Length: 233
Image (cartoon, rainbow, N blue to C red; front, side):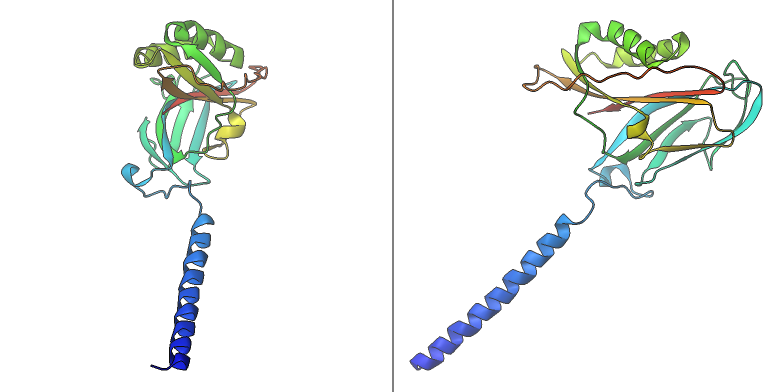
């Protein structure tokens, strides 16, 4: 092979390598543009590593007078209901009394759902396990929940939060919840209170503590809907 032949061969390989490198860089750039936190409605839980389950949301309804309601839940960014009581099917169609009794036997609508993990983690509290009872009692009352709703929460969750000495608790209010889990109600309530807690158990206090949230006042006037739930990490 002459010197000219060798030079031509090297130039050809450089061009080929440059073309392959360009293709790889374009492919990587395309991957970075893909949404990393979304769920398809028909995905199985184990196939969605960027989704979280919201456990045991309870929806309480207090209309001014007895009313028939149709209530549906949608997931703008993907997700699905994975448990419900009464059965959700294509939505709840229920008769509700002013005291909150639903279909003569339920005091709340229960569901669990899976949706993208786009919950805030900048504002919250660090609470010692021994202080959880008083924390939730006071915190839920500050947000506007009544005694029965608070009792339902603490009776269920306190016995399930016993594995860590401290818990990080990030509140998710309506502005965080509505973009992920949307409620549609045939008769629109006058006041809506939605609150989920994202709870993470920790063995030691974190180096950087979350900012303390401001809690907006909630007035229970007219037709009121309240909802609480928990996300676990």
